[in-house]
Length: 296
Figure 1 (cartoon, rainbow, N blue to C red):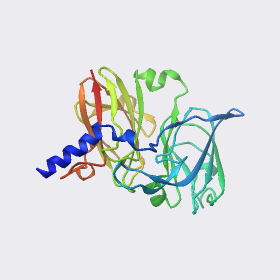
Figure 2 (figure 1 turned 60 degrees about the vertical axis):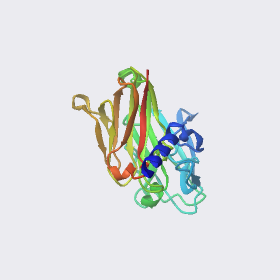
Figure 3 (figure 1 turned 135 degrees about the vertical axis):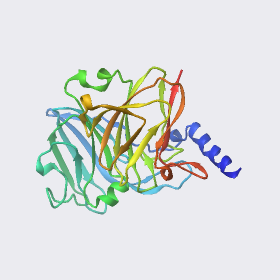
Figure 4 (figure 1 turned 135 degrees about the horizontal axis):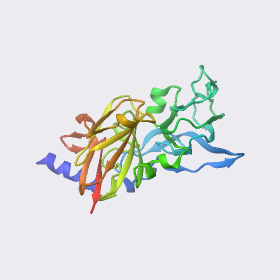
C-alpha cells in the first residue's frame, strides 16, 4: 500500500545514514582556552540557515557558534568559567546558564539581572561551575521565539572527583547529550527530525549514558525498545538510592534526566517520543525518532 511504501522509504533514508549527509550538525564539543586559570568560551549569537533533514528546505534559525544546538560546553566542578557572547542578531538577547549556581548579575535575565545584550554588543558571564551534572545554556529574552529557533545548548559540569564521572562510575563507553525541541521545524532531537536524526551505535555489552534535556514547550516521554533504562540523576543531582528503572521516561520542559543503558540485546531498536503524533503517522516515522543499534 502507499503508506507502506512511504514508511519504508523514510526508514531506508535513516538506515542509509542521512544524518551524516546534512551539514551543520550541532552539539559538538567546544574546547575552551585557558586565560589566567579560567576556562574561556567565545561564542557568537547569530542568524543561521538550518537543515532539519536532507529533503526539506533550510529554515531561518538562530545559533550559538553557527549551529543549533549550540556547541557542547564541558568543564569540571569548581572551574572558573568565562563565557563571552557577542550578539550578531538584529535584536537584543540574554543568556541563562540553566541549573548553575551563578552570581545574580550573571543570571542572564534582561531587565531583572542585566541589561539586554544589544546588537553588536558582547556580554561576559563569569562564575564558578557548580553544581556538577547535566545543565543547559539558552536565551532568556524573547525566549519563546529565540529558544524555539535554536538558541540553546548543553552545559556539562563533570564532578570534581573523577571516580564519580560516568566513565568511571558506570564504565560508560559513550556519554550522549539528547536535546529535544518542538517549535521550529517540528519535533526534533539535537536539531534534527527523523530520518536525519543520529542513531546511537554501541557494541553488545557496552554501557552508555544519555543525558535527556528538554528545551521545548511540551513534555516528551522517551521510550526505548529492547532494553530498560536506569535513571540515575535529575536536573544534575544524583538520585542515589532513589534511582529507578523504566522503559519510558517523561521529560518536562527545562528538565534533565541522566539514563544508564546496558546494551545487552543486539539489534536495531527504536527509540522515540511516545506522544505518537510526535513520532509516527500514515507515511511512516518522523520527528522524534532514532534508534539504538547494538552490534554483536
